[in-house]
Amino acid sequence: MAKTGKKRLIKFWKYYEQWYETYKVNSVKGATLSKYKLTLKWVKKLVPELMLGDMTREDFQRLINDYGKSHEKPTVFDFYHHIAPAIEDAVYEGWITGKNPNHKIKITSAIENTDKGPKYLELDGVKKLEKVFHEDKTGFGDFFDFCLRTGVRFAEGLGLTPKDVDTDNMTIYINKTFNYKTKEYGNVDYGEFMPTKNKYSVRIIKIDYKTLMDLQRHMEGLDPKQPIWPTWYDSIGRVSSKYGKPRIFNSTFNERLKRMCWQAGVHPITVHGLRHTHASILIANRVSIQSVAKRLGHGDTETTQRVYIHLLDELAQEDENKILTVMAGI
Image 1 (cartoon, helix red, strand yellow):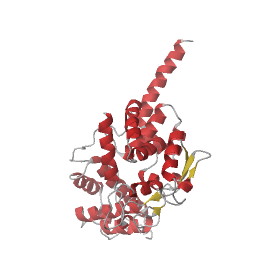
Image 2 (cartoon, rainbow, N blue to C red):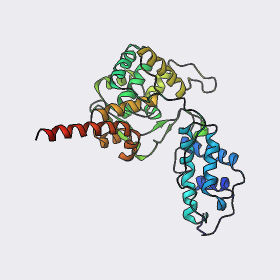
Image 3 (cartoon, rainbow, N blue to C red):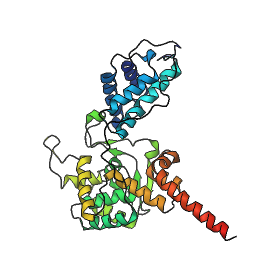
Image 4 (cartoon, rainbow, N blue to C red):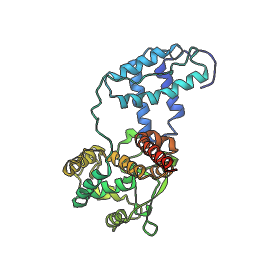
């Protein structure tokens, strides 16, 4: 794509296709690339005749509004997030000669967000859920407890092998993920290893004694390069006729965790909610935002601050009260 400084005579959906093939195909994971492909399908469906050079802020806002007619707000935001950089690049190249279409776009949705509950648990809820985890004999409790105590992403946890566990130093090395999806998410077969989300996701995480004991129990007899948790699931799951072994679905794990939450008498969260819970507990106990960001595999503290701003605001208020108390004692 050469810089021309002139309005480009190409349909927006075609430009977007060329854009993600140029800038994203070899730089993002298969799962992320699939989102760009899905975004392209919707752009082509909603604005098939829109020309790149004629695109205005109103056109972009209308695209977002139309997508929001059938999607919840978080999904609409994700849709916007995958399109906006392409528009910014087109403006930079001079292919959109008018004002920047990506100016103060509002994320709208006509669909009520059905997920209104908190995405994490407070410490008292965690303690109730821990009891259910400990009583569970299927192995799900061990896996969920592992996610809760380490804060790893679902695919990162599935990608852990005995070779990644340092029993002497009580650490785990997150350096890959496990592809539990299909080839539509890349050129990697189901059950194979994939790179982490980004370079910052490669990290060493300190673990507690309980987590180490659970891992050692599930690692027993495994090849050093064999995935620990998928191997456990192979022993209890229903065999898939297509794959010849149990197929891992994130939804299956979320449903099992939901039942355990009900059993514990706490509001249901997802497996990813265990990661949020992990971070929330650390922040509430005043672990530095830098340490939390590093443990979660965030590239910078801004990401961590944005996700957990609600907790940081609460702590800031506590600090304000503490400052007043200190000043009053002078």
